[in-house]
Structures are given as C-alpha cells and as structure tokens.
Image (tube, rainbow, N blue to C red; front, side, top):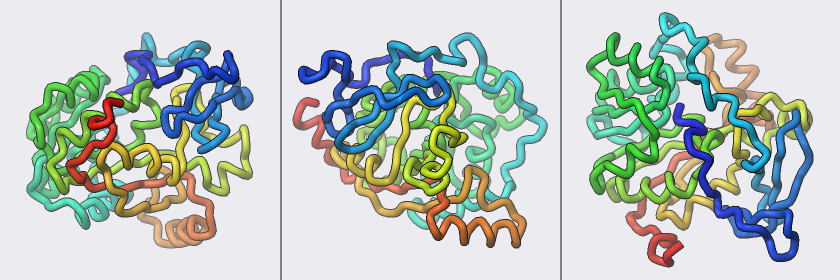
Length: 289
C-alpha cells in the first residue's frame, strides 16, 4: 500500500476569509476545522463535504514502520470470495488479456487473481516486506517496490487497459499528482477502479466519531458525489458505483452474504467501489491546473 511517504501539497493554501482554513482541492471551497475524531485533526469542506486531515498536525503512524510488518503472508489467498468478486465485476468493463497496473497491491491477492484471470499485471507497493515475499513466491507477476506516483510518472503514455486502486485514495497525501498521471497512462477507453470507505453510509452516520474507518492512517474521506466531482475534470467518466457492506464482502457464506446485501441495500454500505472510463481529455491539464 503506497502510503504517506511524502507529505505533499494538497492545494491547501490559506483561505482569505479564514486565515486558519484551507481550500478544498475537490471544489476550492473553504475547509475549516471539523472536530477531532479519535484525536485526528480533520478539516471539512463547507460546500462539498469532503474531509481530510490537516497535515500540519498529522503524524504519520507508518513513517518508520512497514505497513505489513505484522502480516502473515502465508495466509495469502487470491481465491477469497471478495477477491473473486472483484475480478468478476471489473471483467464486465475491462477485457481480459489487457495490461493492468495494480497500484497499492498490498498482500498481492488481487494482483494474483488478475494474473490468473488473464491480465498482464504490474503490481506496485511501497512495502518492502510484501514485495520481497511476493517476488520470491509468485515471480509470474511483475512486482515493483516503490511509490505509485513515481511508478506512473515513468510509465509510457497509454500503457494500460486497466488501473486498480483498492483502498488507496484514503491514504494518499497528494491525490492531484496521482490523478494527473492516470489519464495519461490509461488508454482511451481504459478502465479505472477505485474502492474507498463511504462517508455517506448509514453505518458511518450512525456511528459518528466511533466509525471504524476514522483511523490515523486514513488521510481522506469520500462519498460517491465527492469522487465524481473530483475525478471528472481529469478526463474520467463515471460508469458505475457498487456499494458493499464492508471491505471483504462477499465472504462466501450464503446466509451472511444475503443478510449483509440486504443491509447494504437499505443504506448500510461502508464501502463504495467505483468504475471509470478514460475519455482521453484532461481538462485540468488543458486549463493549467
């Protein structure tokens, strides 16, 4: 997972109306101190509702620790139900056999499942522990240890048919630099998949400050509308949003999955998985933003 290696600018210039406020990089509205949730210095846009951490006060919990230092890599299983579900859904939009960049590949399960489904996979993560293990165990995938923005910056134009970002955007301190590269490296008509926690789910609303996705390593907080507003100017056309009860849904238990699907259907959706198509036209780049 490519997280927190650079505390980069997020268009956070001080607001002229409020010297202690910042400008929202989604809508350029005024961001002001929301309140501290679990001691997190959260800023919230008064106009679009986007929430992010004030990096001047934030302390990166993984600045000196590998994200996967406590992980058991022997438990890796690309056949998990929710991983197979990911492949099934994205295959509705992306043709198998195409070239895929799995950015923030983590434990490697999605990258391995993509490879087994027929995609040519470049998997990138900044966890040295994860990449070293995966290179040794699964050499059939092209594993790269590094920053995902640096990786995209060096990629050729229109190199990929598919880019996947499963639970990455909530961790990044510089979304603009990432999203500026995506339309360049995606082929026209190429597919982007983004999955993030859902700020608008009923669970998040009811739990308030106790919502379990308010954690120190989550920098950004989204809902469907915020993502659409933010990504459209980069030349990305929103084509579908799938809502999920939680991160690892479905789990392969018929009764549990049915109950959780029903709960998700009435609004208890902690996760949104969004699908995008590259139009080949980045209006932010044209306008010099």
